[in-house]
Length: 50
Image (cartoon, rainbow, N blue to C red):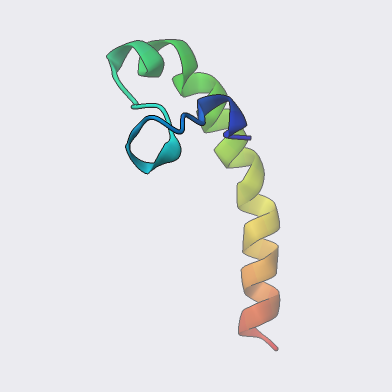
């Protein structure tokens, strides 16, 4: 999901999230994160009720 933002030369190993990146990629990143919400909530529910 975030492999396109990897940059070994930048702090933390990822590209800096600046105004240009936000303008061009914010919607795509937001959709990818939202796609993880349901599976993560199901996992948290299983852990909490185990």
